[in-house]
Image (tube, helix red, strand yellow):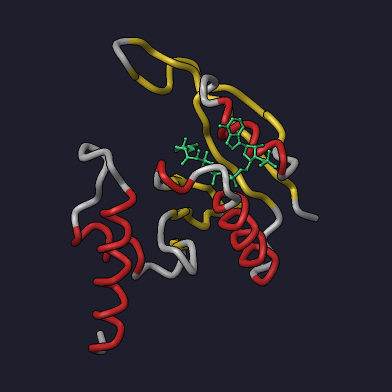
Length: 146
Ligand SMILES: CC(C)(COP(=O)(O)OP(=O)(O)OC[C@H]1O[C@@H](n2cnc3c(N)ncnc32)[C@H](O)[C@@H]1OP(=O)(O)O)[C@@H](O)C(=O)NCCC(=O)NCCS
């Protein structure tokens, strides 16, 4: 790895840590580096303000969004939309047809965002999340690009 790459990765990890406020979910530096150094993985940091990120992986079936998270202080100003738009550009350059994700059926904010991009619900995973002492289903959503 070149020195400039290492610096860039350090910067990305620093920003990622500031955004990810859930200690349980936060990746260790080593895991983060392993993720971003894999060509089949995608990590997009918002810019000019590095206050949100989207990560995803390329699979046989398309792109799977793993997570999208915006710092609470910077929500509702279009950063989520901008990250998804950047992902669509990547998908189009790579000629990838499908984008998938899973979202809690209770996360109406995120569902609204995905619907805005024409994601549709294609399935459900029963009791997929465990939050606040209860199980919550996940919707599987899909966007077909061409
Ligand atoms: C979901 C999330 C990524 C949206 O990011 P954001 O930068 O605030 O979203 P944007 O400002 O780009 O808004 C895009 C659309 O999302 C929807 N939306 C955003 N905030 C909303 C809210 N509080 N209530 C309802 N809909 C909302 C709207 O449809 C909005 O479009 P509009 O502004 O044209 O009405 C952000 O709320 C977040 O980080 N949530 C916590 C993590 C999370 O739930 N991630 C998704 C896991 S699957």
